[in-house]
Image (cartoon, rainbow, N blue to C red):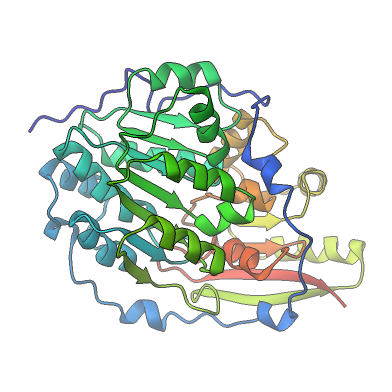
Length: 402
């Protein structure tokens, strides 16, 4: 079979962004409730790789019932042995089952749904897929993965995210893309405009469902799911599972295959500890000294607000550190450049808010530093999941007052 990845509708191409999107997920994030008390003892834990080391995959990627072109693209990306969630979810998905994946960030969830979806789309011309993610960065990350796995497939797509040119998205949608990737708010905008009709979409993915609901997207997500084809295959991925998520999944799935990998104690391969400080000056000095340590190679530092992130990143730059900042107040172009420089290690410290950091996929992050406390323990789990990826040991430090 001949494979050509068509890009005439700019699927995966670079785009210009503005900051005047009618609805974006950053504004939704501001609606979150006030922080809850977290026992500091929960921030202290020794990494334990036992569970990961014990898992023996039942397949290799060459074993899956997928096209040779897709196997070639997986090999080009260096994918040989599936991660646990890929090993268990892909065979069920290839059989047409609905899939629920409960797993911490960094476990390979994107390929777990992208592989069976691309296989389905390349063998069934009547199928179309909708993939919903909570943030722009995660949507772009998913698009990148789909573009690489779908290379040479002839598939076309559209990326619908807040802050992006509506004109460009309208043009892309006119080509009837087979893969649509978007954030809930912007996707719903297109539904309301009549520019996105979902009745033909029979594959749907909700990635990081817990974060979408936490950001206030429950009504948007429900509206979107109601618009889809009744005869569909659904994929739901989340790091946590509470009553709201369980109710949503039960309403929109049929006899799903469930993969549960997340441990109750957080990321198993991340050393977790606290840093006690006596005031703002002491906190800054302790952060400075931590960042000077040789083992602190690449770091995400979380702070609470956009203003605090800007202030902290500027302070680190003045102190001679290689630092960048990412938050919802920056233009999409600035966010993309900051993340690109961080991935390339042109800067080794990225100061971020929770929402802006969602979807950051950088495998060599050694440390996560909670300069401000997370609003809840689930947020803490999502934060520290940025470190300790790809079988590495990571470190998480949380600043708390004396």
